[in-house]
Structure formats: structure tokens, C-alpha cells
Image (cartoon, rainbow, N blue to C red):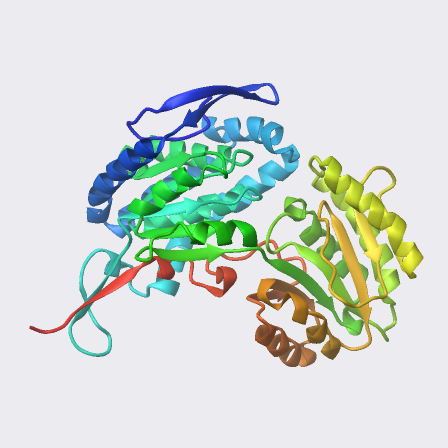
Length: 452
């Protein structure tokens, strides 16, 4: 199978094999990428002339195909993704269902209305509600996406927002997470070939900076996902005239008040930990649990371990790397020496609950490994987050209504971008402000036409 997607183009291929699956991977040169960029920019002219409502309908039609278990592309994804990514089949099914329910017509229109207001601003000049004259929104001719390797769903969302902006899209995907974006492009081609002509999904080595630089030369917008090192490296390669959106490393956590500690909360927390095997930017690394209630934080840690045991049957864990397993085992041995307690899975490293009396924030090695840290009062938490302030993303809360306002305001001032109920951390609406930014609006350029 092809490990890339190109409309009406051909490039040299390298025949590989991954876990017994034969793959044809692209071998692209700088000149190939320039030609592909030019082709996409030319294709964008037709996309720009389409009604935004037609584009929404085509994406909706593709999403409905993905929601059908009998669809051939959906079946291909369910069959191959567990082999390539190491995710369990149950997790893959959940991921696909959750992803494509957010790409239906009602949800896409909700996103457009929430961010743009009047979707027809993408089609024509409209009278300004306030002020004089008219205004219209334009997307980039070409958007370059450097997409993440941890969650393929994020890559699909990025491409969809590019299409809603009526932009052509050239995506570099991870060699580990290439399949879902490629299959998504194929599903669009099946629905509307014209729309899929505005997409290219390719992969090359991260060290091939000359190839990435070539993509940036033609793009009007670059959307880049990656850690600090990746962002710092690529920032130097982007022309000054190219607009850029960076999505860097992020950390999330949970907060539980003394009045809210119960077994239901443990089950909800286990869901947040288990989904996507803790790989997302909204996956919790730890829970701060307030002392002084009828149930102690260490008892909550025990309940959470029991809930993770149940979750391991409902959503089996994927493959854990040897490096992750070694780090988890090291922590299991070290925490008791510091006065903490460990509640591990009966065998292997299926999950681990680490109760640690030290309240300073600790980063989890992931793979369903969670820290439980006690605090005397919720007001202490902000101070413990100061060291990770630039990286804060989401917080799941279990706090009585009358105590929420002060805590929410404190977290918002610290830099948190999303605050929700525990159990909902991994299920944000499409309209949430990813990294505190607009998903679609940041892609657009507005033109004002004053009375002449």
C-alpha cells in the first residue's frame, strides 16, 4: 500500500515493510516539493471558488463514510492501524468514532459560526456589521502542515481546518502515524476528487531540513506541531513573510476537592488516563487531591488503580516501548523510598498509580502512569505549577460549584487553556481553543472594502 497521498502526481518510491505490511514510501526531492506546491496552488483556485457550504457537505459525506463499519476505507484503517501504531483494536475504533463525529455538517457549521460568525464571508464580500463598507475572509493559497506523531486525529483536524479556509494543504506526517491522514485524503477523493486535489500527504526524515525548507518557500502559512527542539529548528527555516502557527509540547492535570472524592470520580479519571494511552496534550499527568475530607488522597489512589484495572478490559492498552517500561519500573521502585506508595497493575506495566507526598509537579512517563499528589488546600496548586506555566494546556476539575470560581480564575491566570469536568478531558468539542487559539480564524486573512 502507498504510505502517502498525491493527487495526479508521481514521485519515486522506496519499498519498505512495517510489521509485515508492504509499504511504498515517497522519495521526494526539493524540486519535487516545489512542483507539488505549484500544482496545489493551482488547484486551490478551484477550491477558492466553491461555496463554503459545499465544502462542508463534502467533508460531512466523507465523515459519514468513516462512521460506517462496512465502509472499505474504515475497514482498512481498523485492520492496519493497530499493526502500525501498536494501539489496541478497541482504541482504534474509539479514536475513529470520536474523530469523525466531530466532522459532520452540524459540528462544522458550529465551528464556522463560532469563529467566523457568517460563513459566507469565505464566499463573498459582506456588509460589515459595524463600521463602513464590506469585508471578506481569505485563506492561504497553500498551508504547510508539519504534523505530530503521537495522535493522528490531530493531523486530520488540521487538514480539515485548512480545507474550510479554502487553502491547499501540503502535509508532512510522521512515519509512525502516516496512515490515517492518507486514508482520510483517499476518502475525500472518493467523495469529491476536486477537493482531494488540494491535498498532499507526504513523509520524509526529520533530519532532511532541506526538504522542509523547500515546502516553506511556497507556503503562505505554516502550521507546526512538535517539541521545543523541533520548533526551534524549524523556526529558522521559515521565511519572514510566512505566517506561522506553532503547537508545542503541552501538559495537563486534574484537581479534586476534598468534598468530591468518590469512586465515580476515580472511574472518570481512569477514562481520561486510558484514552489514547495518555499520549494527547489533554492527557492528565497527575491529579492534585485535597486532604481533609472523608476520603484521603491515598484511598483515592487505590480506587483509581481499581478503575484502571476495569478500563484495561474496556479499552485495552497498546504496546509499551521498552524505554517507557524501564522508566515506569524505575519509578515503581523509587517512590516507596521517598515515602510514597505504588499501586501497579498485577503484571507488566499495564497501568501504574504513583502516590507521592511531594506536591511539586511531576511529568508522567505516560503509558497509563499517573501521579496522585496531596495538597492541604486547593489554593496551593497554582504555586506548584509555576515551573511548567508555559506548557499548561488542560485541567479536569471535580470541585463543588461554590468553590470553582476562585480555582478556575487562578488556573486561567497560570496559562491553562481548557478547564472541564474530570472524565471529559479527552473529549473536547471542535470549538475548543487549542493552545488558547482559534482553530480556523487564525488561518484567515480579512480584507476590508470601504466605500469608494
